[in-house]
Image (cartoon, rainbow, N blue to C red; front, side, top):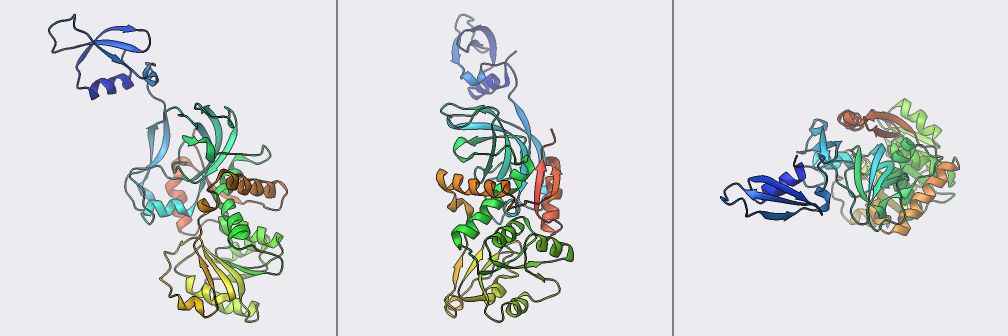
Length: 382
């Protein structure tokens, strides 16, 4: 029986073949049907990966063939190869869901089609390629960022982006905080270094990143003001360390921030909402305050004239966590501090929603409808 791998290679050469005999070293002699002389056999040297007669390994993954709503995500079987030099193959145990996944699915952020979404997961190393020295089969690792493709039972990753997960941290917890937790670390420790005495405004304070921002900033000694949409979310944000809650559907957050700060404003605004809150957020800042826009769940903000910043010498930034974890050293520092904060109890990640991998569409729909709090995690069906 000729394997599918051999069949593909022979088809590529437009050959109709009759197997003549197998030799050692992965060689197959075959005859061209159109050739009248059976003594004239051609030889094709097959790659090592084709030496097995078994079918290629298949895993289930979410695939997106066109941009659109949650319904464009389909569970399909895809082929997964063996890791190449510097790569590892990981069997995912838990997969983080983030708003950036929505941005790619809707086409707000561009990527080639078709593709597998997802930029965050935790799993067990199943195989390693040549040259891999820091990871071995059986290791539990986490990753966040490129390559995209975590909405899958298994995936191939560069060894350089995988970080070890402490045994004390649950799969789902680790998967829920890699991207969101390192984003919180970037926002609080790198973009604007929050310290005791600072007053900060966190939009979507009950969300995945917002929850971690409130807990971490409170521990650093800052006064935390958080906006939420419901009473239920207000209760969670209070538990997470918000000193002042603003119900965005009932109150004007600019007016409330002005009241809370006695007209002084806040040192920094962490805004993941975008269009609906951007201009108001600028109004909430004190002189030389920092406007940190790290998301746009309501859509991209309208353009802002530089003169709007001049009035109070404001700083405006749109950071990406991938630029702050670009080197291996930065990645290990951020993930190490994040995991240490969880182990110490300073951070208490909220994995409030879990879905099967096959339910990824429903997870996206709930996330976009603001039905979720804390983190959302997918669990492979197998």
